[in-house]
Length: 324
Ligand SMILES: NC(=O)C1=CN([C@@H]2O[C@H](COP(=O)(O)OP(=O)(O)OC[C@H]3O[C@@H](n4cnc5c(N)ncnc54)[C@H](O)[C@@H]3O)[C@@H](O)[C@H]2O)C=CC1
Ligand SMILES: O=C(O)C(=O)CO
Image (cartoon, rainbow, N blue to C red; front, side, top):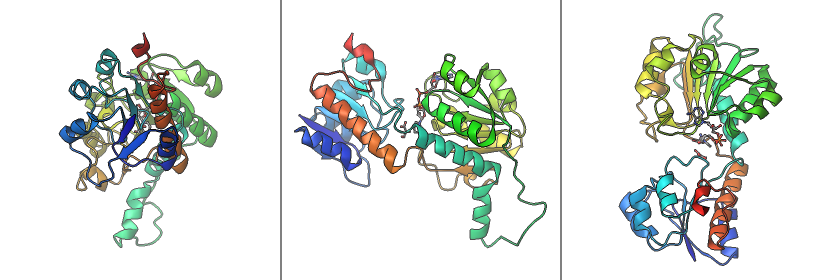
């Protein structure tokens, strides 16, 4: 049995598969494989570890008839046509939990950075524009006791809410596909409608899956309902917000600021106006980029492959219907 990995991943995962007797090949070049070449390549393999959000659609899966498993090096599975994989009886694995705290750390970091205009002020030093202490310039806003709105209160949303409650005694409201009893009991979180979430949040943080339903849900209409002091944080997926509408809302002062770890497209163009706005902080999709989280992801991705090769259920399966 052999495995193809689209980008280098931490050694612990590779070792696990090699120790189990499987042959591992890694695409180790700076340039990612173009889609047609990737499809061609995967036709020779029994398992794919997708470590770069490669688009795995029905055409891809139909062409790669040998694939016994698609193992994602991510918790998000929006890059895969899950229905097609299920139809073709291909199990898809992902990497939940091990990256929740790391990703919530980045959401928290962005919230603080935006509230104190940290990136903009740092750039001022680099540009030689720091003229000394200013009593009425560079003023941010404090977070203590404010309301955190969580859009998508799953694993990462919970970790973000927990941090905000502990650090700033923030009031937690959330909108989810279904109520989260654990968060309500542990954090006194309150379920609200999407409209209420927009209207009441001082900080609105996005942690929902990217789907047809959530695509572009943060648009002109949504921003217009938010508070003028609101800070918008997206560590979910860039496609959850409409970038043109976000720029307009920030520019016109409809909302106060934004912190983004994800953009659409990625990478973001280095001349994108968002990068130069005083009330915006952007990071290059580093939510899960800690040694600990990435090792955990590599282990899970490898365990999913090994389970599939043994004919067992994947430890973290996205499409359990495949076993029906
Ligand atoms: N920036 C980064 O590096 C990272 C980004 N992510 C993103 O974060 C997302 C969330 O990850 P987890 O918390 O582990 O997933 P999760 O599955 O634990 O939580 C997702 C939550 O979103 C909710 N949701 C889905 N559709 C919704 C809708 N239409 N309206 C309201 N809520 C909805 C679900 O009910 C669930 O509670 C991933 O799908 C991925 O896109 C994940 C890891 C790292
Ligand atoms: O896991 C994910 O979905 C990411 O975006 C990167 O860890």
